[in-house]
Amino acid sequence: MVCREQLSKNQVKWVFAGITCVSVVVIAAIVLAITLRRPGSELEACSPDADMLDYLLSLGQISRRDALEVTWYHAANSKKAMTAALNSNITVLEADVNVEGLGTANETGVPIMAHPPAIYSDNTLEQWLDAVLGSSQKGIKLDFKNIKAVGPSLDLLRRLTEEGKVRRPIWINADILKGPNMLISTEVNATQFLALVQEKYPKATLSPGWTTFYVSTSPNRTYTQAMVEKMHELVGEVPQRVTFPVRSSMVRVAWPHFSWLLSQSERYSLTLWQAASDPMSVEDLLYVRDNTAVHQVYYDIFEPLLLTDMLELCQGLWQPVSFQMQAMLLGHSTAGAIARLLASSPRATVTVEHNPAGGDYASVRTALLAARAVDRTRVYYRLPQGYHKDLLADVGRN
Image 1 (cartoon, one colour):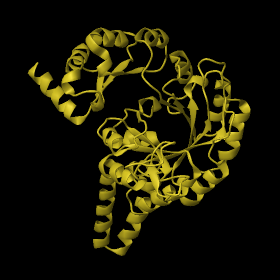
Image 2 (cartoon, rainbow, N blue to C red):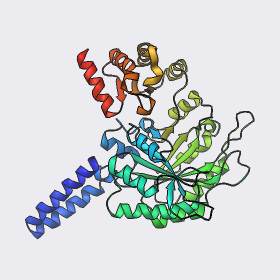
Image 3 (tube, one colour):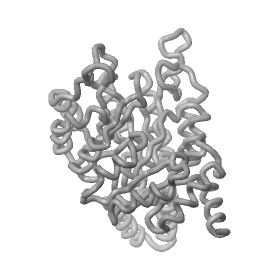
Image 4 (cartoon, helix red, strand yellow):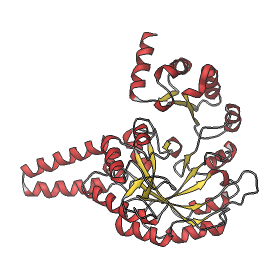
């Protein structure tokens, strides 16, 4: 791991300096301090408050500081889901933190991995962090739906950080303001949430959002300027990086408000998210993409719409276009689909990805070999390590 390797190199420098003389130690310390404070250094990218893009770039998990390249695994809560997430090539894990037995006589105060209304789990937050920190390099986003879970969780994170175990960005998420179409208040108390983060674990990226509701059969309101200004009022003076989760089905109509929000601070970014039942307009997403810098907006969304729509909407974009496709969905049309995508622009690339939960290597072998045959320089693969080895072996035989 880059972060651990960098730490080891620095330790060697200190030992060598100690063997020489005091003056050399002083000089080495000054040089090292300057190095560690240099923006963008590898060690800085490995701290809990680091920029997620800098961290993933330092590991080689993304090719440039483009938030579109970041991928997400949702609800990695149970031990089974967590294991599947750890075995995937997803770059950031999202998980939900609740309190064991919340609201019952059995409430323990122990943070567990569960999405409400679930109040029990086979996985505590401590077990989850031990597994994720000990066996992966994935970024972490923790979602809180109840203020009772926040304090104990931040205490645990602080302890693990002081022990040197947290060497990656940590995002702390909670919906702290009432948002579009919400008739009742279900948000986490904003004042308490922000105060707890500043008191217990300020070395994190904040992800404060709005509660939202979407009904496809009735007119839906969207985010208002007042909602956005209230959020900026709450977090405008905090020292942390801030990424605002925004429901993708509502972003286009409210874009003037979010464009204004992004302009208020270089610390700000957006994370567009999509509920499973939400409609998604690729045109809306491309509008956002074309009106922001590539590092300003993360896309936590499901698969793109029809290939034809993607091709039509991506024509003429000045930015490089990176298409991501699931191997299982390519089927017998693999070669034709990939060829059409690459033909849309000389700057287009395709990343074929597969989660082992969707099938073994044999189930996607034909699609992967067909993709390889189309182009060897513009088609990338995001696969489990074992699948990579099998694919390389097949390529060698063929």
